[in-house]
Length: 473
Image (cartoon, rainbow, N blue to C red; front, side):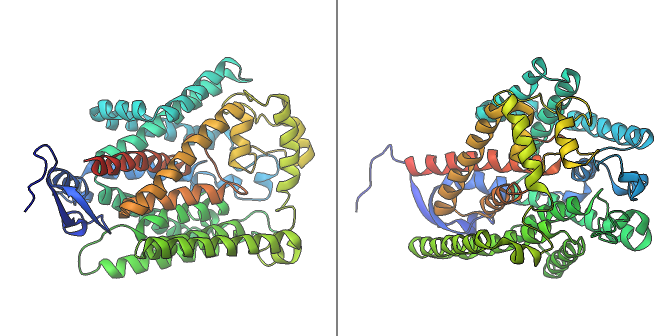
């Protein structure tokens, strides 16, 4: 019987599911590593909801999910007259004051909560240098910005947002982190239901009567935001491990309530996003159970089907888009994108400064606003174009490097160690990619859509390194 080299690690072929509830595969694991994995992914000894810090974090994450403020804070804008002059991101002085105070409070709380793990957060910034460079570029944009004060203040907020993502990633075991976001989703769904049925002047859209009057917006300031955020908060439920006799009923109820809310937003984009995310989740769950060659064949078939569907849509888009309430201009988006590209061409490399382009009828934004006939316009209707407008092609390249590196890491991890957390990270990448086909956000401060993906970017990078380390051993 061969003993092996004395310096070689003693590996045991163990079922990862017996060591780590987060696992779905068999892999050779060094025993000390297996112990660490158990510590990282097992449920904490104390109940998650018994911690005051958890409740504070939930409040912070809910405010970030609201993006422009909760619907009950923007009551005067939930009318046709209230939005005639300003877009959803604007508000009157009283509401803006409340929302500004609210956001300042969550950033103060975030800093206080993160202080004990400042060293770990700093280490994450050092390990993820491209992310650090992107944030530094956003901060430095105040030097060429058309609004230096806004650029500096907002870029610092974005940096705190990413630090919060790194804090959550380091503070909580993977399954507890999933539970945290499920809890946030539960609060958002419950709050939305209460507003919709008890305070419909806030929970329902009472503006844009032509196509959205009565659509559900819940606690969010607009139906599209509601649909996207609830879809984002739906994803964790498919990967979290829940215990207790009511776990299955809770999971089913959570999924059904969120799907009903998304459906009642009457947002065609949210419908497509939610359907695509559900299909992706199902494909990932099925793929990790299959042999690699079978999973590859399934992926190729799915890719071929998407190409065929895309070709059919492009060849005759009008009747197909009409089925989901859209026209070939994507509700005027194509015209807006054309106007924005003209503005981008004037400052393609550096942009106009982070959070500095949209100034209504002042500056370069006036050209886009007048052509779109939308006085309150404050968004490029596409995350990539918004990033390009603000901090130029340099930022687009940096973000693309971050994103596609994460995609590569996701494929690597899913092939070798398809854990539940890795599958969630992969679904977040899909969410980011799909939303930015026609809308989305990539680097918007105070926006949960731009916070959670950085958990996936850092998590996939760390997981890929860990797996490579196991293989070398």
